[in-house]
Length: 419
Image 1: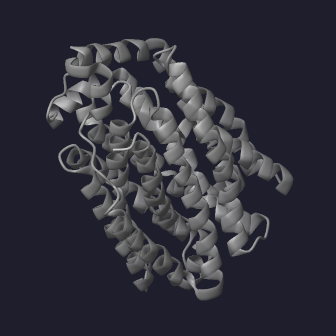
Image 2 (image 1 turned 90 degrees about the vertical axis):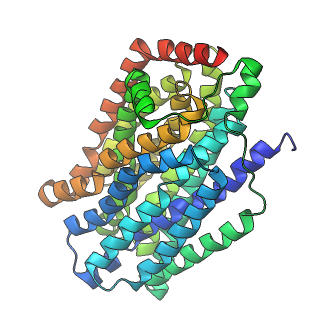
């Protein structure tokens, strides 16, 4: 196998992740069309966003548990075909509860991807390149969000909202058929075996009870999960409510609202994520908590720009805030799973990613509904600005983890792997 293949894997997974996010983002850009056709209020629109997040989160631990016991390639490509078919089926909706059902089902289809892909990348990339690989992969999230936001709005504006789902779902199925030939399954724990050699001690499987005991005894994981809830809450506010915010407050078209709500944040995040991965890999060589330091600083720096997004009446300042928010978001996102994998054994990393997604999406996934509720009382601008407080809480959690837990938990894992 070519030494470059580990980077080719990141490239193939990049395209799958692109459609993972394009499919889930598409619905937010056609909120005004759904609001009109189905006579929906802000709480019902919020439920459409939260139904996906709750299903995604509830099924994530099971998905992660399965990923540690099956071929990751099979899980990834099967998931791609399932969620793409569900995306296409959303076009059949004729009532609000149909939309709610398909959105929840799509969350079920997509939940296996991240535990499987992060586990696969961690087996191709060891400690020296893991944050960079995951940071590069993370840029697909931003491009998928932009593509889903803009093209769903554009297609919906000209051909109706149903065609947005048909197009994205169909392209996802085609991609899965192409990658079936080229994506290869790595050996479990491959990168760690390369680092520790014959001394590396890997279990074949880690039972769920033993995994839960491991997590409870590794406070760094609990801190990272809590911060992920905070970060995901704010990110979900952006994904779900920003298109409608721009449509209502600034009078942009559907396509332009979908584009502006995603383009500036996601392009800036595309810059921030590789930089955050590089910085984290560099700091990790010097400090056990190097990756977590990058995350804590990113949330702290991003909070003022979240506040500004909701409070400004100037398009110029809105764009500036979105760009700087996105840059900070990229630095955080590059290390979501790499930080966890510094303290979690290779044979349990799929399960760990599943539990991370569960708490992140169940907690953070309440954002569409919470913001919809607040918007009905204090207005959407103030509701969006209030999310800055959640970023500050996440930064405080990570800082506490760096001071109290990370060094000990990293040393414990490295000692266990080295035998």
